[in-house]
Length: 305
Image (cartoon, rainbow, N blue to C red):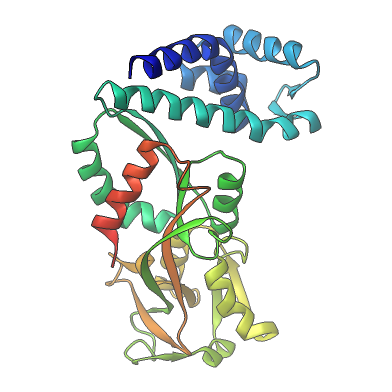
């Protein structure tokens, strides 16, 4: 036990300077600005600039393009970015292991999530989790299917709450099945039906989300094909609900999204049936940090349906 503690202590001491530079570089990429990265990390802008400059000098090439509007990755930066994110992930795992040896649970978990899951699932989960593990910091990033998959691939998040489609190729922990439904104004002539035939959308004006934003809903739109009459497109589920409630068209959304809006819109099951499988995707659960594994354990216990 003493040997392990000494190894970790030595590693943390050697890594501290590079770890700060890597963290600053990642923040600059995520926020697209040295100023914003400095604000979020509690550094001065000058310190952020110096650390990124030092990292570029160490590597021997530019990582970021500087413009008046912000910063963006160079081609070399795009290549190095996932490796730097992975290095930070391993640093976090080492710190968490050291904390576990000391008998303390701490760390950080970066979670990518659908808005509907963030609204309806995470408050219950995080309230219980934070009570038991107050030392674990949780960061949330909301996005669509394609964004979540890309963030996990690039190590920008440690895990994603998503549909099975976005978690393909990763370790997958299923939690629940969520029906895809027709979203209609409460006064719509088909609002009281037991099911809504997909072919009926051909006669309706539609309010839709971009196909890359929700791949599960996109399957329904694909089945309608060229007969889809699109009036409005929005990335925001709740904007779509508002438009439908105000008679600007009908839509297709997962049932979970409609919770709390039953007085404004009606969700009618589709014929044929469509659903999305919700769960957690992790790059590799076996090598994930202790804090990530704890979140997965709690999600399985609290949210699994």
